[in-house]
Image (cartoon, rainbow, N blue to C red):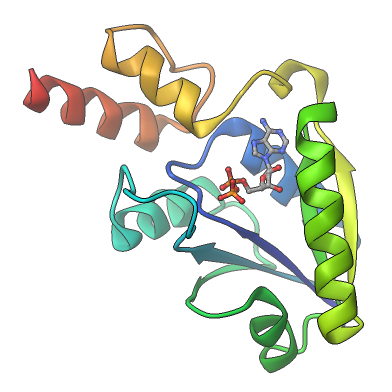
Length: 161
Ligand code: ADP
């Protein structure tokens, strides 16, 4: 059985992420979505449990996708779970340099290849951080994130006011 690994912080999951996961799930028997603590993001907006819960709701319609937690190196996780490839989404040139570097490092460390899926144009401007910025100031993000996420963002920022 061929397994692909989609790692990310998903803080929170957006429709751009869901699109990449759906398309990956069409090509591999099994997809593991691994939620990381991103070392470059000092503070998470949502806790790990909440990020996973939002993801589970968002991919509930995909039978061959499961959500896991990733604590250490992505390549160690991939090996432990017998994932043969890492799949990442690419939005713009700005993603490319970092993602290429990561892919080459992961290949060097483990021999595992990274496949890139290009974003659907309607999601190319979407990022978790931008969605949160918009939601924070009362903007409507319901077309950009799964409904459970839109609801949680609303509650979060109502509380912070
Ligand atoms: P990270 O924590 O590594 O920054 P994210 O959780 O933001 O990761 O995203 C995980 C993966 O999803 C990355 O490969 C990222 O490029 C991709 N991604 C994020 N937003 C989109 C989008 N709108 N369209 C396509 N891919 C995306």
